[in-house]
Image (cartoon, rainbow, N blue to C red; front, side):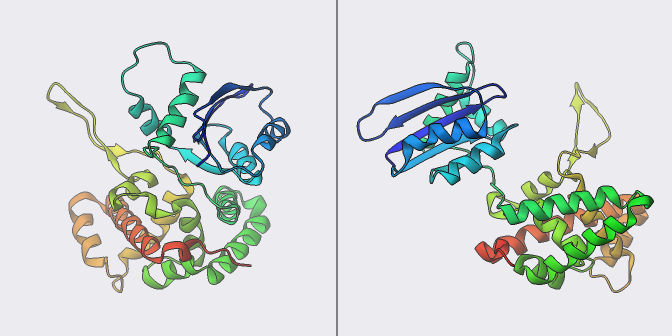
Length: 288
């Protein structure tokens, strides 16, 4: 890598810090205003060079990554919470320049906590899925919801990752497979299936203090469309033909049907993680 750098993105400006690994020269500064065209012009300086940049997965990251890739620069997306943890305790005031330098150093040290950059075809399905979930509750827009449903089902029939989910998971149909596939993303970024469940927002949070412990609640931190699709698939567990029927009945008798469905949805999330992970790159193969 000849050029390694970090970009700290804000609404008004983008702060950069990069180093030429051959000469050791460090360049810092700001890109103002933080617009697509201005950033595109700034990136032209790296034409023909081997350059790698990292930015955090906060507001505004998408257009920055798109412009980096357009310019032939390798883009990395840092997970914000883990990046902050690696910064350690603050010894001095936090600045945009320090954040950019921190990203650059993590990239140099190969310690950058990576977030998944969804390809454009996955983003398209994600948007359609979220729109469908929102529209299905509005009767007046039933025609539009039906059109999106047909498009999502058609995509699922052609995409290898979606087909695998339909074939291997009881209760997952073409519609829910497309939404789960787009929202779950590349599961190889998760170190375990527990992280995949945490991504869905179906994990149980616990609050405790001085011996007092509150009743667990759903975290609800992940995409709502993903939780909807997993829950819809989990509803099939009540059928006697479901492989999870005995488990569903057992949990339902102890905790109630709603919690049983949630438990099955978490089991499905774990299975999705393993299925997509085992497919490798084929899981997100682009189809026409």
